[in-house]
Image 1 (cartoon, rainbow, N blue to C red):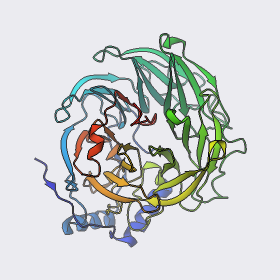
Image 2: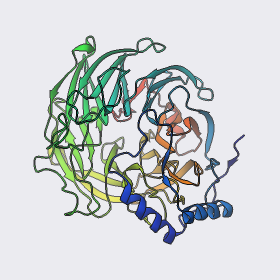
Image 3: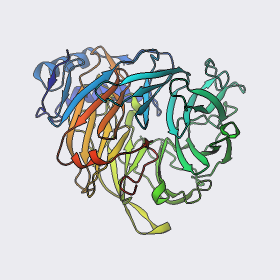
Image 4: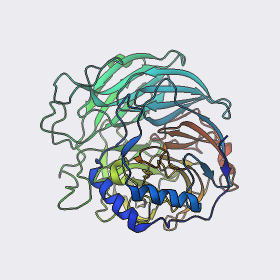
Length: 496
């Protein structure tokens, strides 16, 4: 049995000198995109740890500064209800979506469907083998959408890896019929330029629009040529998904976007978008696009219109994802410093790099502006062997307050309040200790989302977790019930 420990008075003190040396090596070898393993690779190791990294981690565990290997700790207002380990799909766990009593878990080898009618005992309903990183996932009605961002021999679920330099290689969106949850049926595919790293759906009556985010073009890739300065928009007829097709590729960066290094050292060059969040009730979208953050109108979903654009060339390295607050007067952008392959939550990095950036949205209509207010970053110490980075999270719906739950890879899960956008604060957490001490390891929660009274997390290595949050500040959220939740398609929680 894993022992659970109450909150500890631990703050970021872990060895700045050793941390700085270890992180420098890691960042120099990390890519700008996710460093998670390729489909079928069950290893979570990134690089061998140095003797000093191992020694410092061991000392930190012995002193109680960080939890032991695989040890679970959490704040007193969080209860760990369940964990379901990976099974037939051994690859990297990725994103989560929800519909009724079901949770859908993306995995680099396919996707898994859970029955969560009893959150304390989730049951596997189906596991679908369909390799193709990173298998970002969405659902709408009887349709499920799956992103493929690795070059495959064809668009089937039995495809094999193939170089992107081959013209016959395929990347893009796959569409499944999930009317029978126990037997999902693959019904269509649409190839998109540079594949689909992530995607966001915009449901519109008889159709579903898909905003496809992808990046990193290369002159040697026949289907991913520069400039790649926009997003692919796919239109899917609900009653005829086999007729899905690309209807537009709007240019979001006519000036080429953030040039990155050497003009802005340490900042990713903008060559597309990593992730987009839409707020259909307000006809708004926020996009995290490597070196840029965007606010745009989706009043016409086939023709999004840019409202404002911001950069942070001091502290942001890789604009990763975005989350609106309920009132649509704030947006939180995450920075994936180190590309998801580095220990960026230790003392050497400090509180502003690799953090969330909180922006107020001021003004009206097309004159709205994104105004920076503050950074938020977990201040619980992490070892140099633990890949830790700001990652996917969602709003916890409480009227009058802005509260978010967020995944931080091996930094665990953080519940934090940004009602005062200038003074964000953590109000709860859950985390496991290092997966191992002999390697710098990519593991921990990829996504942590609040759905119908519980927090659900997809741990890259450890599987599917369910948490209960018992706190007077968040208890009103338990009364909010949804029929469906794709976090990147944010609902209006209170106008239902």
